[in-house]
Image (cartoon, rainbow, N blue to C red; front, side):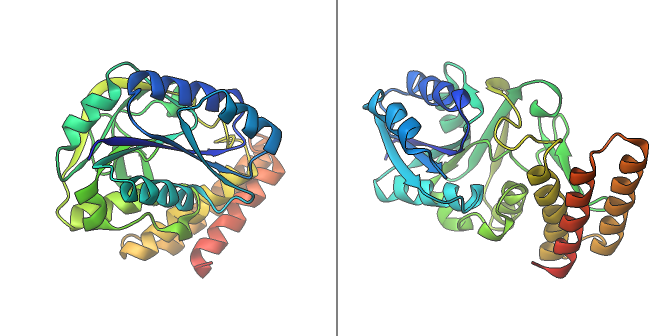
Length: 270
């Protein structure tokens, strides 16, 4: 009933190797499972062959972060793990991170640390603003724990259930934490920088169509699922904001359109 580590990756390049090596260095006895989405066979083979301690769960397609996390965590628990550390491929743990988070999660909870990084990649707490339909980073707030580096106990997973795969990417961690709290699961924010975050290495967060669509869509989906705030008002603000950014030249056309498409999809429930 030890700790296992699950890393979910999507064509991340050099960041993935660094993530895996840092995790293994901190917990060399912990099974390390890589859920590699839309993997490139040659690169994947080279990565795995040079790391005999790594267990690979490759996928030819990309079913989303939530689905990958579920696959890896379920496998780790089936193998007998009592705790599972879920990592983004752009998160690099520091020495002592695994042990510190295991202790903070305890036998029935979940825990995340502060993350060091530039701009929004840094995380020192998460707050949900239901009126704005926004889940953002705020120091000291534990409305939700960040899914890019979260230790989940077996008991917490059993009480809460898996990540909602309909979110695909973004806000699945917020939704999971809301459901965990409702189930009485303790959530611990560890006020120490125990990992570094190279935010957006895979998705181009803040600049890509992928980011714009899913972030816009899932903010509204979160409101609708939990019956909070006004999805219509939030979607309208997103569309207006995208239009203003387009007019001012601060938002590329493709990104602005992706934000609007995401807002519409959120309202339609698709």
